[in-house]
Length: 253
Image 1 (cartoon, one colour):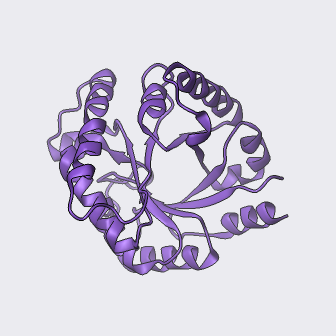
Image 2 (cartoon, rainbow, N blue to C red; image 1 turned 120 degrees about the vertical axis):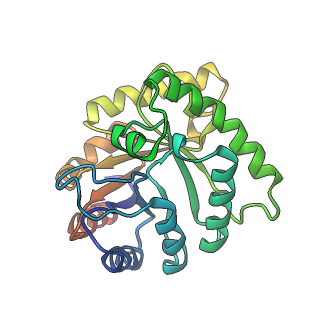
């Protein structure tokens, strides 16, 4: 099996701040390549009224609690923050982390977040248009901030829409994240390559990541064959890192 990167997404629901901090410190000590939380305001599964914590506040703490892994939101909802403010927040967390921040972003989808926090849901199309308009604003603000980010601070776009989202990836991003199964990922990966050709972008400039369930770790080779370079294991409380260790053993063969 070829060498690949390994990440962990910790679900910030049905847990405590103490358990989250213990988990991301443990994952960082394992030597994972990336650490993530999601950007939602309520649980996505299980008890809808379980405890839940906001992403960017957590990322500030993660930045100073960890030493090695890249960190970010998988992925930030574009609708929830003014693009210029988001750029400034990302730059600040990048400094707190010593240059390890990844600005992951997507169009958003979780209706409860929008309804309870007073954001306009709109349509899938309108949210994608908003994302397309926000990306140049984010880039311009990053260029104007003093001081600038410490690290390269790559932009990741999450999603699999073949007509709009993958075009935005080809135009703007250094990383792309989507989901399985491997056959679907392979098709979308090919579409992204074609968009890169369309916009005169070297497809090798875009790191391909895939978010997998612990049960999908056994399919790691199939995801690599489909074009993935970086597998991110999604785990909820009690944050069992066993599947991550399994991937590490496979990666180092």
